[in-house]
Image 1 (tube, rainbow, N blue to C red):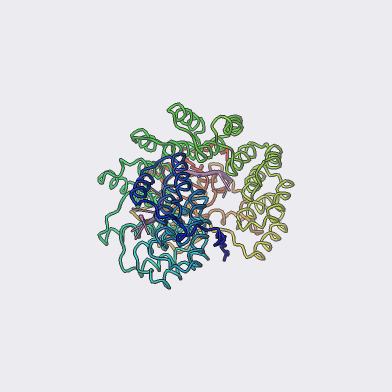
Image 2 (image 1 turned 90 degrees about the horizontal axis):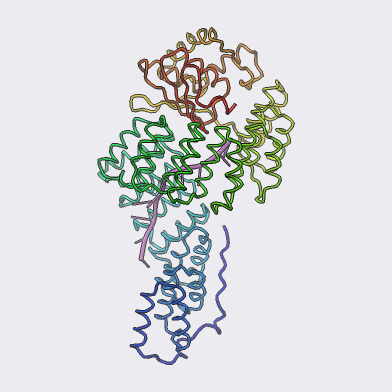
Amino acid sequence: MIEYRFFPLPSSKRPSLSSSTPPHSHENSHILSLLKSISHSHHLKQLHAKIITHSLQCLSSILTATTLSYISTNSLDSALLLFRSIPNPSSFLWNTMIRACATPGDFYLSLLLYSNLLSSGLPPDKFTFPFALKSCAGLSNLAQGIQLHQHSISFGCHRDPFVNAALVDMYCKCGDVCTARQVFDTMPNRDLVSWTSMISGYAHNGCSIETLDFFNNMQFSNVKANRVGLLSVFLACGRLGALRKGERFHGYAIQTGFLEDISVATAVLDMYSKCTNLGVVRQMFDSANGKDVVCWSAMIASYGYHGLGKEAIYTFDQMVNAGLKPNHATFTCLLAACSHSGLVEEGRIFFTTMGAKYGVAPNLNHYACMVDILGRAGKLQEAEELIAEMPLEPDSSMWGSLLGACRIHGDLELGEKIADRLMELDSEYSGYYVLLSNIYAARSRWTDVEKLRKQMSERRMRKEQGISLIEFNHQIHKFTIGERSHPQSVEIYLYLQKLYPLMKQLGYVPMVEFSLHDIEDENKEMALSYHSERLAIAFGLMNTSPGSPIRIVKNLRICRDCHNAIKIISQIVDHVIFVRDMNRFHHFENGVCSCGDYCF
DNA sequence: TTAGGGTTAG
C-alpha cells in the first residue's frame, strides 16, 4: 500500500479564530455572495486579497467559500493551499476537496486528502467514499480500493447506494470483475447506475457475453436502459462480431430516441465497422447529427480496419476542413490506417507534422504505429533507428511491433536481438514469444522453438489460446483449435475433410511451418486444417444458405496458412467470408482478400 | 456535495 503523507502547516502559522477582529456581518454576507457568483480566477484572487486586507480570512465561512470558489474556477492549487490553512475544515469541505481532486492527474492528491481526513479524526462519510473510490478506480489501485471498501464497512457506509455503485465501478476498473459482481449481488437496492456500472465493467474487461446477458437481466428486472448502458452493449456486440444482436440493439436505440445522441450513434457506427462491410458504416456516419472528433475518428478507424487507407486520409482531411481538431486517438486511427494499407510516405508525413501542424505530439502509440508502417514495408533498419532516436522511453509494445515486422520479413538476426530486449523488459505478453517462435519455426529451427517454449513455461506464461466466434441463430458459437465439444463437431470435421481435396485441386499447399510442433508433415497439415477459424467457417457454411455472408471474429492474428486456405475456400463456395482478426478485417471473395495479402 | 460513458498500436 502507498503511504500517503500530508504536510499540514505548523499550528503556530495557522490563522486563529480567537485573535480576529469581529467583522461586520453585512460585509460578510456581501463577500459570501460575491464569492458564490465569481467566475474568473483573476477576480477571485483580487477578492481574496481584499479578504486578507480586511482580516476576514479568520472566518471559517469566508475561508470555506473562498476555497469553493477556487475549485469552481478550476484553480485547484490555490484551493489546496487555502484549504491547508483552514484549522478545522468541515466534512463537507473535506469531501469537496477530495472530489475536486478526483480527476485524471490529481487522483493521488485525492487519496492523500482522504488519508489526511482520517488523521484529522473526522470520520469519512457516505459522500467521501464515492469520490475516494473514484480516485482508486482512476489509478487502478486495487489494494487501496480494498482498504476503502473495508473502511466503508467500518464507518457504516457500505449500504449506501452511491457507495455501492462506486465500489462496483472501482473493482471493475481495477480489473476485479468477480468482486464487483459480489458487491452488486449483495446490494440492497440496485438502481440504473449500479446496473450500468456492472454492465460497463463487464464490457471494459472483455467479458462481452456477460455484458449482453447482464443487459438482458437488467431489462428483465424492469430497469429501463439508458444511453450509457447501450454504449457498453454496442462495444460488446462489436467485439463478438454479433451483427444480428447489434442490429436489434440499433433498432432499440432508434425506438427510444437514444440514437440521436452522438455518443450512441458513434458506438453503433463502431459496432457495424467491427461486424460488417463499410456501406452500412458510412450510412451511419452520414446520418449522424452533430458529428464530433470521436465520431470522425471512429469513421477513420473503420476505413483503416477495412484496408481503405486513402479513404481514411480523405476523411481526416474532411474532418479538418470541417473545423474539428484531431486528437491523439484520431492520429492513432489514421496512422494505423496508413499501416494497414502500406501508405508509407503518407504515414511518415502525418507522423512528422502532427505535432507542429495539429498540436498533437506523438505518443508511444503513434511511435508504435510508425514502427509498424516502416516495419511492414520492409524498412526494418529505419524502424529500428526510429526507436533508438525517439524522445520517449520505448516500451515492450514498441519492440513487439518491430518483432512483428521481423516475422513478416523473416529477419531472424534482428528478431533475436529484439527478443533479447523484450526478455530484459520482462514482458508478460506471450505473443512476443510466439512471434519469435514463428520466425524459428519458419526456418525449421525446432531446437530454438523448444527452448523458447521452455522459457515460457519457466516464466509461467502460456500461449494465448486462439478463439474464433460466429453468430448463428442469435447465439454466439465459439471454436478453439482442434476442439470436438461443439454439438456439430462430427459434421464439421467431415465437411472440412470433403473440402480439403477440392482446395488442393485449386492449388492449396499447406504451409506446414505455421504448425509449430516438431511433427511429421502429414500431421502438421491436419493440425493446420483444424485451426479455430476453419472450424467456425465450416460451421457457418454448413448452416447457412448459399449467398449468405459468413462472419468470423478471431482474438489473435489469422495465420498465413489459414489466410491462403480461406482465399481458396472463397473460390469454392458461394459465400463471402469476413474474418476480423485482432488487427483488421479480411474480406474474402472469389479467391481474393481485401487486405491484398499486405499483412503477411 | 454523492455514480455509469462513444474513437486508440501489435
